[in-house]
Amino acid sequence: MADDKDVLRDVWFGRIPACFTLNQDEETEREAEPYYLLLPRVSYLTLVTDKVKKHFLRVMRAEDVGEMWFEYEGTPLKWHYPIGVLFDLHASNSILPWSITVHFKNFPGQDLLHCMSSSVVEAHFMSSIKEADALKHKSQVVNDMQKKDHKQLWMGLQNDKFEQFWAMNRKLMEYPTEEAGFRYIPFRIYQVNGTHTSTPLILESSQGTEKRYQVVIHGIEPLMETPLQWLSEHLSHPDNFLHICVVPAPSD
Amino acid sequence: QSLSLSVTAAQMATWRRQIFEQLSERTKREVDEFRHYEQAIEQCVWVKKGTM
Image (spheres, rainbow over the protein chains, first blue to last red):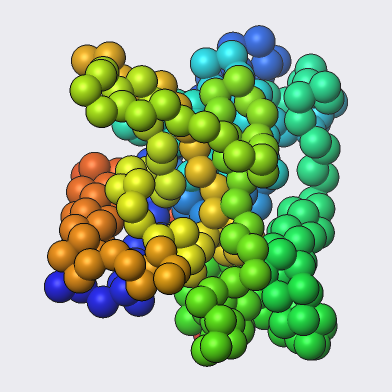
């Protein structure tokens, strides 16, 4: 049987094939071809779409270009959710590649946070790591790290460097041997209405009845008896939170 | 007794095996057919060839 450490690699190297298409209402000087990319599930849209932006700017006038944002079937995609969460939440039962529409005007400020540079993503990412460590270790681990250690976590994610990231992240995953695990498990639960919560959610038992919901983490459905501590250590995102999507079961 | 200690070895094997199998299926579904796609993040190459 595979080693538990293999799960960390599978999680890190998860990819979603995506087809980016320019919104039909954008002003262009010539036709914009779609752009195909393999997106890292654990990263953020605004961090990994420089190539998409460059591709579409070639056919647009500078004065028609506002802040870039993304939409899937009418839903603006929140860049501060991990890419894999956005896919599992909105598109997990759709045909691949994931079809994403690119916009450069009419930024939906009521739905999306602005993100003009990667430093905004970095601030969000580091804030989440600190929040998670407050729950797991009363902030002791993250506070004991130096600034260069924080930078190593961020650069690992930004440059898709698994070894660099985990050399530091393993410290955030440790706990005293006399304790059974973390003080609290950092998690976020997402539902299709676009909200996320850290409060308990009661799922009705599906035994003997038709399954109404899927509980999805990284595109898979772990069994309900999987220990939460193990899930937290192995299936957390780089921000150290377990991101759990509750989506309607496909009706076949 | 904690939950993690109360599960039997057989149950543990079941949930672990199920996660490994599903991750493997996920790779086949989401990656294997699309390996010809460009990666969003280029792996840095610090030494580049060029003419002066």
